[in-house]
Image (cartoon, rainbow over all chains, first blue to last red; front, side, top):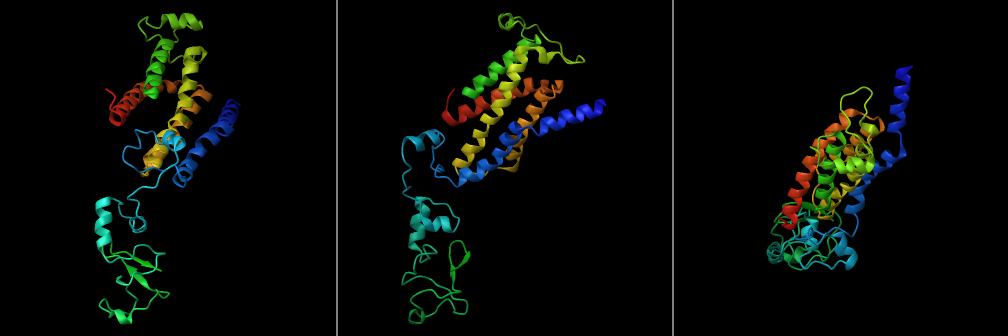
Length: 138
Length: 131
């Protein structure tokens, strides 16, 4: 009987809504915050205690927040941005290709003449980033 | 800084509840009407102490405040390790079950509080440069 009583006590403890809600809310914390506008990757954000700074003033876009770097999963730093801009790379997946862009259709060699290049990327075209060597299908 | 002060206070109050305070917390026991409670008795008497029980509950709720640790990592765009997530998910369970089932093993809290007090102080020093 004592075992039954202990089991009932433990069962009652582990099914208490307070602990269940409290701890399982923790599992939601990461996805909720990551997809919020509160994320601030700037240096010194800890000092400004982030939440306070965001509520005190609307977040301002960062000067070095380059879509290309984000797309390729590379660090968005000013030096990297400048180096990247000198390269003839696809700046963003959704951006139309620039005239002098390096484009790599599946069957076309690297040194294809410019006259052979289509004005817009056809379906199935593979864009290649020289720096990251990652391929992104448009 | 706030959590470091909280942990230091919790450590002192727990030590006072158990009579490990060398007389420095006698005024606190007089205030609450508690007497120093011995450990390792059956049934346990530590949960009759108001100081012990209140500190235990405060420590339990501080586990939820510590979720901010993860929140700041996420807001800074940093990775949250499995160990970090496991710790913050499990810590409230650990403390909660200790209180709910009135388990005396829970006394390890006293040691944890001191460790956490040092940890918070260290974090405070490294992030804000406080001496």
